[in-house]
Length: 274
Image 1: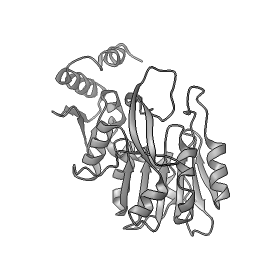
Image 2: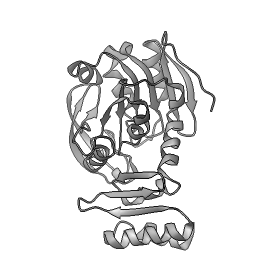
Image 3: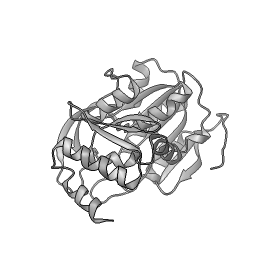
């Protein structure tokens, strides 16, 4: 890591926004990256690349777009193994842990109906801008095993906000939590083509709150990384047990991210090599 990057990373949280944007843009020019970052009045940011634009919420995440927005979306599509899913127009898709809604942006090409869950307000605002033309349609709630109010340990700078406390000193918020079962029933969603579950260690709880409707979901991608609580436990075994008991099987995995794609038995699908 060079001196310039070290200096930028150390000062990125403290320097005024106009100076931050100038520093990032100068660095991009010097590195040959065709990326321009703009600061917005509402405290959000916009990245303009050769292949489009995207809104993001945290200063230190501009680097995801240095090789273009499509490249970033392609990484996420590979992480969640989306190539195996035969999306069709009007398919319903749930994105648990939507962050700024990048998965939703990727899925626009298929004409799906996107339901993004993101409790962090700045990230939810970006998801609205990126997917709903700024309309407030991102669900600012957590998915959970029951309807309740959760203590939510906020760590948005690294996208590690969670219902479980970690060792870091985090801001604690209270957020409304709902079950996927109730959400689908209340919104009259008969079937989900796909659900992405990335709940920073709460994946088993999210799946527990969906057990009564799992037979109405075709594909589920679960991020089972080492993110649960202070012990940083993985959630594969608990998540796999719930899904196996509800007639799901693993059809592929991305072990770099520790994500697994499950398909409900009996669903006709496709398998596409990487």
